[in-house]
Length: 151
Image (cartoon, rainbow, N blue to C red; front, top):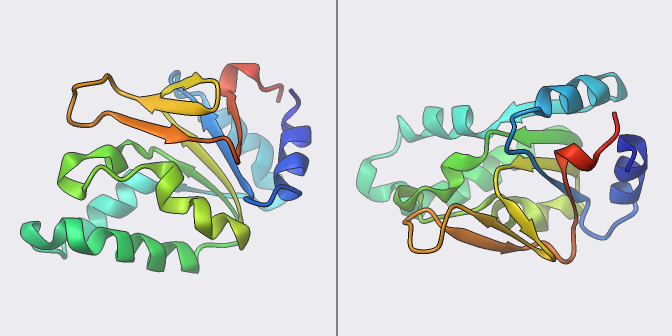
């Protein structure tokens, strides 16, 4: 599937959130291809680590969701969110990139780059039984492996 086609399909979807599973960390190619079209990339882990410095440990689970929502509101209209693994952390309440950003994707075009395995209409992160395991429903979203995208 061509990247341009995916971006156009995503723009016309109810939720404008394209999920790209990238276990090989090849997302720089995607960022380079979309930057000239006005897309901006943001490292989720860097942002969250910076915000956590200002939140007492025992309040992090309670406040992180609100902090992410406030940050997201300030982002431009075309965003690529990469390095999202921190969201699965048990210390943050095992959030996930789909849950954290899906409902905001009606307002902005989003590409979320995440680790995991695609199983039909679900993306699984980690292994069952591990503290960071998460299974996300992506049936309402466009979702592809980065290996299946032509740049």
